[in-house]
Amino acid sequence: MIPFSPPRIDEQIINAVTEALKSGWITTGPRTKELEKQISNYCGVNNTLCLNSWTNAVELFLRWYGVGPGDEVIVPAYTYAATANIVLHCGASPVMADVDQNALMDLDSVQRLISDRTKVIMPVDIGGLPFDYPALFQLVKNHTDSFGFNPRSAAQEKMGRILILADAAHSFGASLNGVKAGKMADVTGFSFHAVKNLTTAEGGALSFNLPAAFDSAEVYRELAIKGLHGQTKDALSKMQAGAWKYDIIEPGYKCNMTDIQAAIGLVELSRYDSETIPRRKSIVQLYSKLLEKYDWAKLPVFKNERMESSYHLYMLRIKGASEIERDEIIRKVALAGVSVNVHFLPLPLLTCYKNLGFNINNYPGAKAFYENEISLPVYYDLSDDQVQTVVNEIAKAVESSLN
Image 1 (cartoon, rainbow, N blue to C red):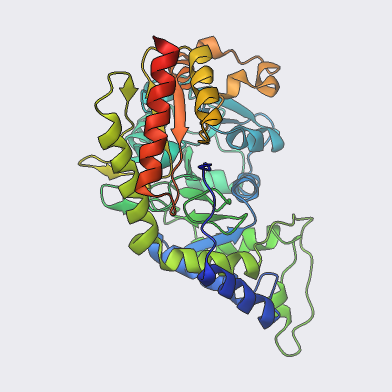
Image 2 (image 1 turned 120 degrees about the vertical axis):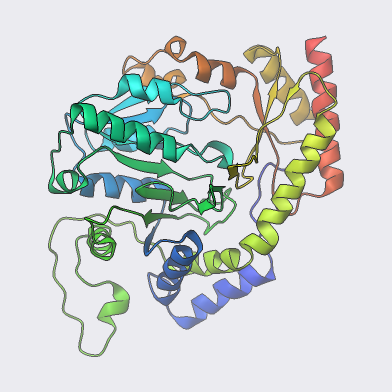
């Protein structure tokens, strides 16, 4: 059996977690703070806040930024539900843009959707492929110059334009014009879920690249408080001699990262560029080499003169396959002992969003990409022989299903 994306659990990870347990720090402590510093250094930003998931991290920021009822956040129709769910959690309205041939949010679609209610645009770096953030910043500037901006909070007034928030759940380590994910947008949300390139079992982070009008250290501090019940001191601060006393300055949330999680993340980050990315890159290159001979295989893009992916997903498309045929291919491959996946069910196909009036037929790009997409296994311990097996089983299933 070839699994889809198991985490890399080796002696280094086990020893790091054991050391964290023995240290007595199993909640937020020195390892979490160190991971924040190292991620900031890696991404080239001043401040990063680690929390317990991408979802809670980005929702926390939206709430801090003042996104609420009457506001709109533009998201792609092709993404995991969390991207839009958090907008609904805040009482705001997700507005869905269609996607291009790489499943990245289509800029022309975005331009048509911007209104005086738009407070945030949230592109998704699907599969690890970075979105064209410079083009989006220019679009936002042009819109602001022509139509102004309608802020509804102090933070929005300070921003003075639509904020660009990167859903980089897939793209830790990706680059565009020599800039790493984390510094491409105003704010970036990372996921460290178990299937991600860099995992902390569960976890997420916010990296801040806000304009000069903002003090990113102060934003970090405010969000850290908001993410710990509004408490002015975390456990590490309270352990200092005589420093037990704290205050609750608002009814906050509970979404801090633990040192057990951070222990895993520190190991993963220490070998990310030297081991993780090179191996994933090698795997996707081998897939492309083996698949390029098949007329039915539409291969994903990972690198060009401007950008390089994080090699998170291998999103193969089967030319000419219908959704029913794609599902039959997946069934046959699974029976052969190979786990594959589909990324993702577009939001308008989900009951929650259908009930809100979204219709997949209004998003032809998302519909076309979804109908014949199959994500192939990519993980550190996947061998070259297993890659060959995956391709062999995909080819057999395709040729028996389409002919």
